[in-house]
Image (cartoon, rainbow, N blue to C red; front, side):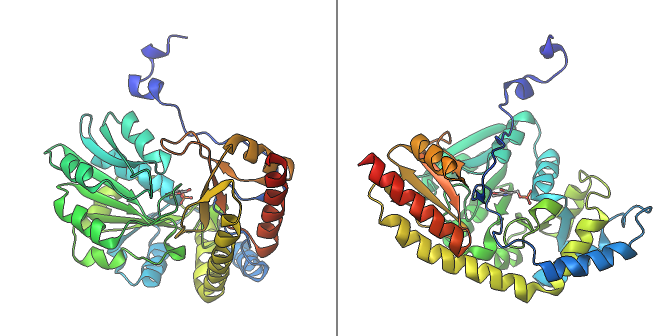
Length: 357
Ligand SMILES: Cc1ncc(COP(=O)(O)O)c(C=O)c1O
C-alpha cells in the first residue's frame, strides 16, 4: 500500500510505542504497585459499582472526580484536569501546545511518549542527552535550547523514567525562569520521591505537573491521571481532552482509593523500605552497576544485559530491557517488588553471577 498517500511523513517515520507481551510469575517490568489494590477496597468498589447508573454517560466534565482529586492535592478544582491515564493528558497537552516547527525540549533518555508524539505533531524535538555518569540534566545545553522564540514546550520527568533519579528543585526553578514556553514536570513517581514540585505552582504560571493513579496508588488497569496547572492552562488543554474520558468504574475506584489513602500510603512506604534494602543487595553483585533510585524502580547496567534479561525471564522474572534507549547500553529497569519477589530476584541474580564467573 502506498502509505505516503494516506499518512503524514512524521507518522510513517515514527517507531511507535511497543511493549512485547511476555508471561512471567514475577512481573517487575512496568513499575506497578506489587501489592495490588487491596481486597477490602475492591469490596467497597463492587458495592458502589452496583449502585451506578451504567446506562448513563458519566459526568460531562468529571466534576465530582476533579473536586475529589483537588481536595486530595489541596488545590482549587479549577487547577486540576483529570484524564484517562496521564498518557491521555500528555497527548491532549501536546496537541494544543505544539504547532509544526515549534521547539520541544526533551531530555534523553526519558519516557518515550513525549518525543514520539512531539515528532508526529511536526515539532522540532530537541533531545538533550543527560550526563552519562549520573543522568543529571545538561543545564547549559538546555538553557541554550530555551533561547528561541519557537521554544514552546519543555518536559522534565522527575523522578525520571527509566533512569530513576530526580532532578534537583533548584534546576527545575532555573529552567522555569528561563523557559519562554510551558514546562511540564511529569511526577508519575512522586509518591516514592524525596521531592515535590507542587509548591512551584504558586510561583510559575508556565508550570504543568502531571501525576497518575497508575503507580503508587495501584490503579494502572483503570487508567486515571491528572494535571495540575493554572486554571487558564487547564481550560485550554480541556479542549483537546476526549469528553467522558474517565469511565464510571475508574471514577469510583479513585474515590474509594482516596477515602482510604492512609492504607495505600502505607503500601508506598513499604515499597520504599523494600527499595532501600534492594539497592545495597543488588550492589553486592560485581557484574552490576546499580544507579541511585528516587522511584519505585531501579536502573542497573549489566556486563551483558541481554543475557541477564533472558536468565531472569527463564526464572519467571520479567524486568524491562531498556538497553535500546540512548546511553543505556546493557541496562535493565527493575520495578521494586514485594519482599518475597525481591528475594527471588536476588537468588536468581546470584545464580547468574556464578554462571558468568
Ligand atoms: C514518566 C511517566 N509518565 C507518564 C506515564 C503514564 O502513566 P499513565 O498510566 O498515567 O498513563 C508513565 C508510565 O509509565 C511514566 O513513566
